[in-house]
Length: 128
Image (cartoon, rainbow, N blue to C red; front, side, top):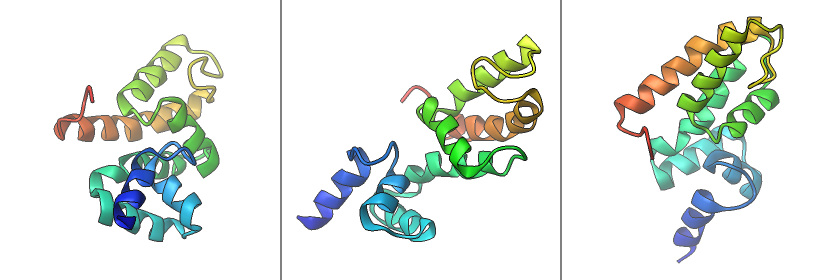
């Protein structure tokens, strides 16, 4: 019963927008321990949002906090974030209206997000 309750909280708890952050907040775990917990209970697919945040935070000019906020604003959907980045690039504004990011950051982030969108599509998860 306790493991079912834990799974339910990881999947749909209100403490955070995605499973790893929920585990992190719920149990005061380190991020690696939270990731391991989520993977053990929900499988590696449940790490996709956190993986995208990690990838985005590797871009110069994006902190982990800003990357998490950006990914959350697109509900963890790499295709929607990709579309917004392309829109911001095509506008040629110094700061994108869809993402709020500087053009140089957008250009560096675009291939990262393209990789996540491609991976999601290959796994048959587009449209879920």
